[in-house]
Every structure is written in C-alpha cells, then in structure tokens.
Image 1 (cartoon, helix red, strand yellow):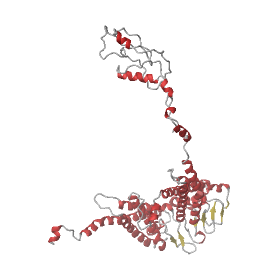
Image 2: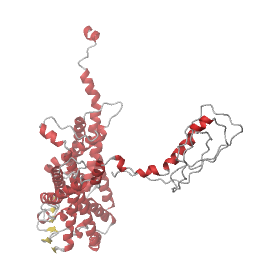
Image 3: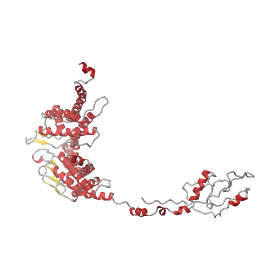
Image 4: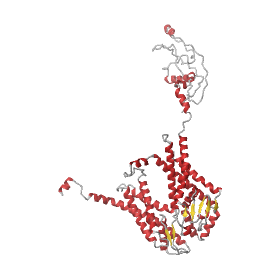
Length: 550
C-alpha cells in the first residue's frame, strides 16, 4: 500500500471511474431517444383527441382514440395495420403510408441524435457509435411499448411488419443525425474493405454521380407534382364534389383535408411514375399509364382519386407527359460533367451512367414507400410498381444523360476563340506589334513637359522638340561660351489633336531662362529678370496602346 501511494501509480478503480463519468451522457442519449418517440406519439395523440372531441358521432371512448394514435404512429414508420371491422368480416390490411407522416419520426429522431452528439464544455463527448446505440435503444423501447399498446385498438399493427419497419426508420434517422453532428464526413472507409474498393470510391466521379442522380430525381418529382396540380385543377369540379360528399361536419372535412395533405407526397411519386411510363396500379385489376387507363378500378371516394385521368386509351395530352423524363435525363447529363479539362470523354460518360443508376435507385425506393394495400382483393395493390418505376427512370436518364454529358464536355473544352491569332502574334516580334506612331505623336512632349514642371529647372528642354521661347533680356556672356553654345534649329510648332478625359495637365510651364552649357556659378543679371512663359502645347493626340488578344 505504501509503494502504491509513494510511486503514484494509478489504482485499478480509475477506468471504472471514467466509465461512471460517461454514464450520464449515455443515459441522456437514451432519454433523448425515448423523448423523440414520445413527442411523435404525443403529437398524433393530441390531433386524434381533438378530432374525436369535435366529432358529433364518436364511436369509441378516449381509450380508443389513444389506441388509434399509437397505430398511426406505427403507420408513420411504414408498419402495416390490420382493420378487423369490415363489411365482409375478413381482416383488411392497411399499408399505404402517408409520406408526410414519415417526416415526423425522422425529424425527431435525427434531432435527438444531433443533440446527443453535441459537444459540451464540461462534459465528455461520447463516440459516434455510442451515441447512435444509446439513442436507438431509447427510441426502440418506446416503439415496442407502442406496438403492444396499439394491439388493443381498432387498428392494431402487424407484429412482423413493426419488427423491421420501426428499427429501419430509426436507424436511418439516427445515422443521419450523428453524421450531420460530426460535420458530414465522407471518409475514411472501413479498413476491412479491399484497398481497390476504398481507392475507387473516393474518386470525384462518385460525388458527381450522386449529385447528378439526385438532380434527376428532383426533376422527376417536380414534374410529378406539376402533373398532380394540373390534374386537380382540370378536375376541379369532381374534386370538390368528392370532398363535400364525404361528410357534412367541419371536423370530418378537416380530417379529410389533413389526410389529403399527408398523401400529397405519395401523389407526387405516383405522378412521376405515370410520366415515366409504368404508371401506377389502382387495385388488382386497373392500371393508369400515359398509353391508357385499363381495367375496372374499385376506388373509394376521395378527393385525390377524383383527379385521375379518364378511362380509355391515351391521348396526345397524356403522351405529352414524356417531357418530364426527357428533362430529367438532360439534368443528369448536365450535372455529370466536370469542369476540369483533363477529364476524358469516357470518364464523363461513365459518370453520367452512374448518375442514371443513382436516379433509378432513388425512384425505386420512393415508389416502394409510396405504395401499399388499402384492403383485400381489389384494393390489395395501390401505387406504382417499384421495380418497373426504377428501371424506367434508369433507362430514360441513361439514354439521354450520356450523350448530353459528352456534348456538354466537348462544348466546355472547345478551343478558345482567337487562338490562331494568338499563335500568329507569338511568332512576331514584340516591337512589330506595338504601334510606332506613338513616338511621333504629341504625347511624348506633353509627358516631358509634365516631368519638367515637377522637377523645376533640373531637367533641361529637349532640343528641337519644342518651339523656341520668346527672346529673353540679353545677358552678358563671354564670347567663348557664346561660341560654344550654338542655337539649335527651331522647328515650327506642330498642331495635334487634343483628346479630353485623359487627365493630362496642359497648363503652360514657367521655366527659368538659362542657356544650356553655362557653368555652375551663373552670372548675376544686371536687373531682375521675369521668367519667360514657355509656349503652350497646342494639343496632344492620345493613342491607346494595342494589346494582343487574350
């Protein structure tokens, strides 16, 4: 014991103390996941209770409303519910998940994961894996309790469907929250992957392919939303009649309106599948495609279903929806082009093809989540077929994206305009390119005059360049000096053109009348001499220097 205390060695209890310090953070993450699930349940419970209270004919007590809220929360995760109260007495599955409801658990779970990964000043930050596991445990615990509780309601959840749908949504949302809290890192990949795979995935083509595929999917969804809006406006009278005939009380109409809003994302995906060509099923015996509406659908009365196209063969108006996948293919090809000149045409084509594959996978997932049964027999199949929608999206975008990407790559890397002129100029001498007439203009005289004005009398005049000054007062000069200094031959002043706006100072300059060539000690004049006024410059013609084209 003395050796341990004197040498300062760590006690074996130190790691357990560290684990105890991290346990509050882990407990907080577990509580955060449970709170996220509870908030989703509470929101739906309040909504259902309000509608139950406002309903003039409530068919069950508040317990039934709470059981229904738990069932709706499970339905928001994609869980299939079972409706036992049917006219035929056969249990009918309800698996058409409103996609707008899915946003509620996803956002709450993602927020819980982000809060668990947030860095605090006084607390130790848990690893990403620990935060993910803790938040997931709290969420799934509440999900299991909700599944058991919903079993006693009018629409219990299928246990097998709930066993994998709820964990799937929770895992994806938690991964997104932890990834966003860690700064959205894109690597490194796990070390157990082969080296060739890790080197290939980090190439820029995959990021561009993801961007291009996401852009194509967004264009398809935007086109689907446009088709749904146009169809609702075209069948406005039928939609209004269907909405008003379902119920006559405001609470019922409000519930129908909320359900229609929750199903609008589903209708958008259905519209994109319709534009791609495979269309969507309206029961076991009916399919709506641009080429025609075949079969006898057994549709319930609902406002969104009243906006379906008319039964029968297709028309040029329905064929025109092919513009949507065409624009999507163009978008994939445009976003798949890199701006670097060293990228080859084969690399650009491969990136566009990968973008088409990504677009097909995205549409496959959306089509699978937006479809589902609304009952049995004729109502057992509603929505687009996931594999047909994904294959059509991949085919349309692949057919158009590859040639568009190659064409855009060639256009961006075309030779610069005037390159031949630059080559010709590079073969010439620089002195031949510059205009020699600048030396013959009046700019040189003007600049020289400005320099003499700034320097005073230190810079003499250039002989023969400026007109002779007025004759000064004679100064006695020795004959030898007078003979040595010969007056230069004066030229007549040249008239040049004055260009305004060049910032030239053409003010006459006062200079001292001092003959060139005199000694350092000038002869004192007999009388004060007034400095003569240099002749003003008549003007200057300023020529811009020509530059070789870039």
